[in-house]
Amino acid sequence: MVMVSKSKIQTQKFAAKLAKKIVSQATGKNAKVLALVGDLGSGKTAFTGGFIKSLGIKTHVPSPTFVIFRRYPISDLKLKIKDLKFKNIFHFDLYRIQKPKEIIDLDFKKIIKNPENIVLIEWPEKILKYLPKDTIKVFLSHSKKEKERIINIK
Image 1 (cartoon, one colour):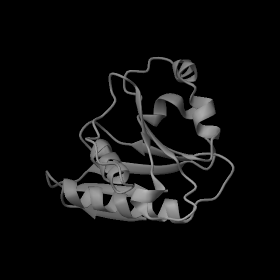
Image 2 (tube, rainbow, N blue to C red; image 1 turned 90 degrees about the vertical axis):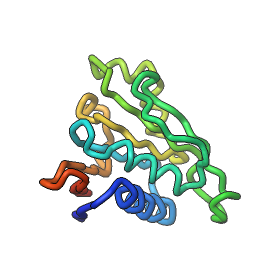
Image 3 (spheres, rainbow, N blue to C red; image 1 turned 60 degrees about the vertical axis):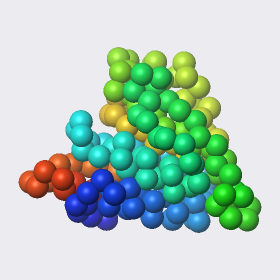
Image 4 (cartoon, one colour; image 1 turned 135 degrees about the horizontal axis):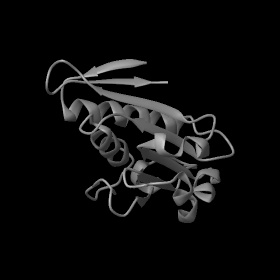
C-alpha cells in the first residue's frame, strides 16, 4: 500500500488508520512489530505520534532518541474496545545503537514475544537479525515537494 502525504497531519491520520486496523485485527502469539524505515526528517516520529495518539494516549509523544525506548500503556476504557488484546505500545528509536546486541540488554526479545504489545521501531535496520519475520515494514521517504512524504507499507 502506497500513500502520498502532503502534511504532518496527513501522515498522522494515515498512521491512526493503520493503528485502528491492527488493533481490530489482533492475532498472533507475539507482539505486533512495525519497522519504520526512512532518512532523518522523513516522518517516522510524526507517523509514530499519530499511531500512538490514536490509541488513546494523551501525553506528548517525543522521539526516545536519548532513552532508546518509551512504553505507553493502552487502556481499553479509552478506546471503548471490549476485550482489547493489546496493553502496551513500545516506541524504540535505535539511532544511537552501535551494535545490534545492545538492544537485547533492554529486554527486547521479551517485549517482542509478548502478544499484548505493539512495538514501533525507528532505525530498525540496526537490528534486522532480531526482527520477527512478520514485521510490518513502513517505508517513509521525502518527495520532490518539501512537505510531501511517500509512505509505503509492506
